[in-house]
Length: 110
Length: 122
Image (cartoon, rainbow over the protein chains, first blue to last red):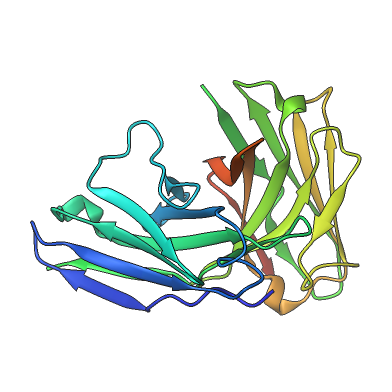
């Protein structure tokens, strides 16, 4: 149950695009299309942004998109806005009724 | 609207016990598996435990197995986490969250509570 690997931080200017990677193993990310992404502002609860690798819940802007290749999932945020500044976490189902999160990525909007 | 409200956190000495609760409303609680996820101060999210919709199955992270017990009372729409033999490294905000799973996908968390802080310190 090792944490998925995410970059500690990424940054971008308003209007630009950023991509956050999430690297796992053959036991989690590579083996299941059950990767989800969560946004967390300081002191707040996580908010679901992407599920099933690339699906967006109702209400999440289409500026947020997800993908996966092999053991690496990615979250791309296009048209960056100030309110996107937050921590982002990936999560994967890891089989046998266990889940694993990434270490989190701090997104700074310059 | 869906609401999850955790309670029961506080300061506890190492080796002691604490029970957290999560009161659910706005949905049919007995139809959903429920989880606990924690976040140590300044750290990332860590999955802790899951219980099936009917309480018949429980699964745990290696870090808490044998010390923590997840349970639920569907008649009270409440989720619990009994934490025993607490250690300093269990200090964290504990969130309860609802799982969504369906035939062709899922295994994600759509609603989260605001969390309750547990501090293990002498």
